[in-house]
Image 1: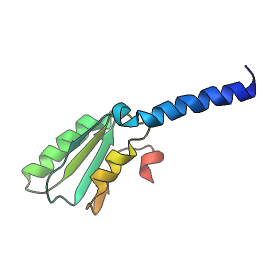
Image 2 (image 1 turned 180 degrees about the vertical axis):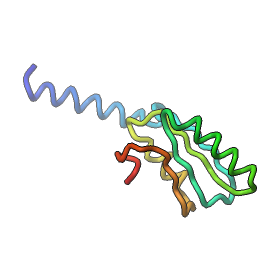
Image 3 (image 1 turned 45 degrees about the vertical axis):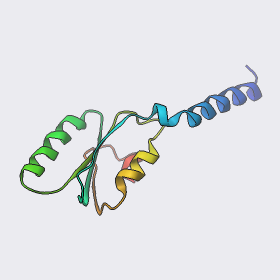
Length: 101
């Protein structure tokens, strides 16, 4: 395949992903009103994070939880929505990649 043709084909796929991103993104947002703490989890940490959120809430503390099921394309609008009015963000993962920034 010629480089120009490959680039156009790749660009077209990326444009389609951008157009349909809202339908591709898969997140669960368990928002607790007035919570200033947000726990963001994905992958294998999500079940442990659910348990942690449950324990924290039983202690009477407020915490919201965002579970990301589709990490590419990054569900930016969902993340920004969840971050709104939060002052403490917890991301339980050892990977120092994209979401740790």
